[in-house]
Image 1 (spheres, rainbow, N blue to C red):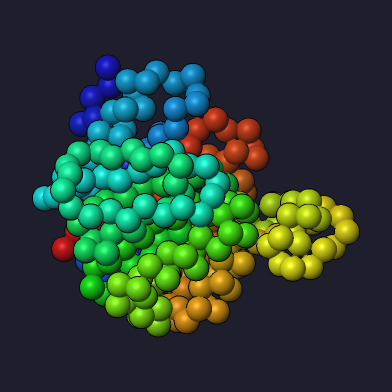
Image 2: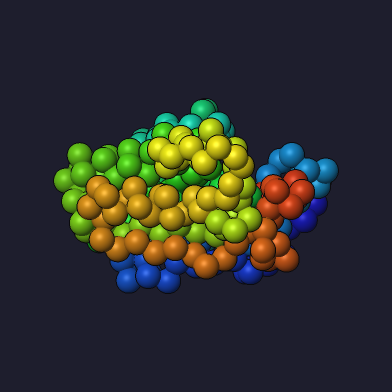
Length: 241
């Protein structure tokens, strides 16, 4: 069995959201160098689980909690509160929020957009937003949960991490219409991160950043479903101070 202590830092080769650090929040997307966190490949389970162990050591902190879920390309968001420790893997959800910031959270991605949200209070969220989640406005729903908890949208920071870019991501006319309200009558490309950023700005978020990295263009650095990779990376967020 591969020891977690012998693995590279799970942040190696990925992207860290530097602008979140001043809020005491660690947010990052893992890369190919850290290895896959998915379970659909032929890679030995022991090696994959060792990576998860290394991740938990890095982010679970004094509260010893990591929240994840079985993702279904929907818009359900799990709200994490106290009362448990360990690694929670919930059912049928594509987003996580911790208003008190005491739970680290992760989503699995490989072309879909990892969306990170943070508030100066330490409240945090992580979302998996493919075209279905984007069309269902999962980011809007997460922002609404922040505002319902007293955290104004204008005070939030939103970052869209490494994902397939607008030049590489082609969708059907129907999908394009669901995302934009306009039917082009043929397959066309679309920039999911631009759509998500537009949604966030429309509900009052002022600080929005978008990664320049594409999982398919930068396939040497990230796993990409459309490039044929069975591997998966993670979008991870945790309050560290």
